[in-house]
Image (cartoon, rainbow, N blue to C red):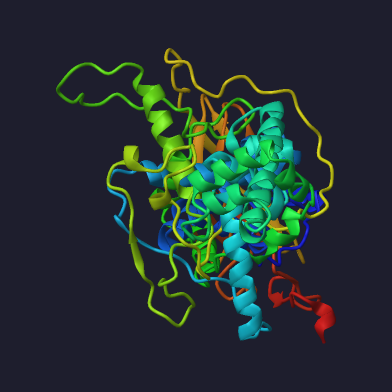
Length: 511
C-alpha cells in the first residue's frame, strides 16, 4: 500500500527554481520527495527493477540539466513524470533490452499478520478482476490519478496529450473500472441470484479473465437482477489501497547525486541530457510516442507506409502491455527482499506485446503479493493547478533544422571576507549550448548541468573550502573546456603587522 503523503505544489515550484539555478541541494530534495513515486511508476512500465532504477536515475539527471528550459514551472510535477515516462519508453524501444526481467520486491507492511495478508490477497484478486477489462492507457491514467495524486491537466502533460483528452480518458477509465468492479462482485456473490452469471463464470477461474469480465459487464446492463446489485456502489479508491508498491532500491539516491555533483564525468552527464532531447518550445520533452524514427538502413522487402506512425503505435502497444500485468504475475512468484528474484520472459517482438485492448486469458496472469506499480490508491486532495491551452503538436516538422550550437561563456567570481559562496555566470553565445560542471580545483565546490538557448544565461554557485591552508583561489571547469576562476579572502591584516595576514575563523561566534 502506498504511504505517500500529499505534496504541496508550492514546494515543487521552489525546487524547480533551485533546479533551474543548478543547485545540487534542490536536486537532493527533489529526489527525497519524488524518487519513491517515480520509481514505482517506472517499474509499472518496465517490470524490471534494474531498468526502472536506470530510467529513474536518467530522468533526474535530465531534469537537473533541463529544468531551466521549462517555461511552465508551476507544472513541474507533471513535467517530471513526462521525463520519467520518456526514459521508460526509450528503454522499451531498445532492441537490445534484456529478455529476462527481475521485478522489484514489494514495500511491505510490517504490522500485518498472516490473516491480514490472506485477506489482502483476496481483495487484490477482486481488484485484479475489476482492472482486467481496462485498456493499458486507462490503467496508466488511473494509476497517475488515484495513487500518484496527479490531476487531469498534469496527467495530460505526463502522457503528452491535451487537457481535455486527459479528462475524457480519466472519465472513461473510472467508468470502466466501476463496471469491472461490479462484474467482479457479482461474479463472487451473485451466482445464486442469476443463472446467467453462474453460466458465465462456471469455469471457476478467478480472478476473472478479460473476456469473462467483458461478458459479465454486457450481461449486467441487460439484467434487472444484476443491475440492482450493480447499483450497490463500492469505493474503488478504498479497494485499490490493497495493491502493492515497488520498493525503491537504497542505492538510487546516492547514484543520482554522485552523477550530478562534481566531479562527475562530463560525457555521462551530457549523454543523459542529450538523450532526453528534443524539447518543445515550452521546454516539455517530446513524447517518444510522437517522435519520428531516425533515418537508417531499410530492411529488404516491400516498402512500409508511415514508418513513424507504425513506430509510435508499437510503443503504445508496449506501454499498454506493461500496464496489463497489474497487479501480479502468478501465485508461484517469490517476493520480498530476502528471496532471490525470479525472472520472467519479456516479449521478443514488440508486436507480440499485449495490445491496448483487453487481453486474452493467457495475457492476464493470476495476481499474487508481487509488487506492481500500476496499483491505484485513494486520491490525495490535490491543490488546484492552473490549466493551460493545449500546446501544438509536439511532433517536430521534418523540415525543422536542429538549432545552431553555440559557445559557452563563463565568468569568474570572488568571495569577500566572511563570505562562503559566489555565483559564476554561464551564458550561451551564438547558439544553444548543453553544459555541465566537470571538475574543480583549489578546494572549490560546485556542480550543475543544463542547456541554454542562444543568449540565455544562468549561474553556478561556487563554495570555498573551510580552511585557507590551500590558498585563496581555485577554478571550476566546464564540459566545453571553459574554466571560471574563483577567489576568496580568508584573512585580514594584523593591526600590529599589516603585511602579515591572520587566519580568520569561518564562524567567529563558534568560540
